[in-house]
Length: 73
Image (spheres, rainbow, N blue to C red):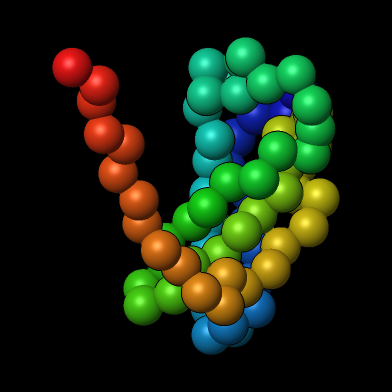
């Protein structure tokens, strides 16, 4: 797997973003590409990461709703 910082140009604001995903974060993933949601300033990006931790695709999230899980008692 490729390690170290990578970069991408934000499709929403055209700013350069430097990013890194810890190897442990994707250890349990069984299917690739995996979607990773990134908050960037006032917008969100959905980045698809392949099995080599490389960027496979990126899109701007048009709508975003944050949810919470309710614990059963």
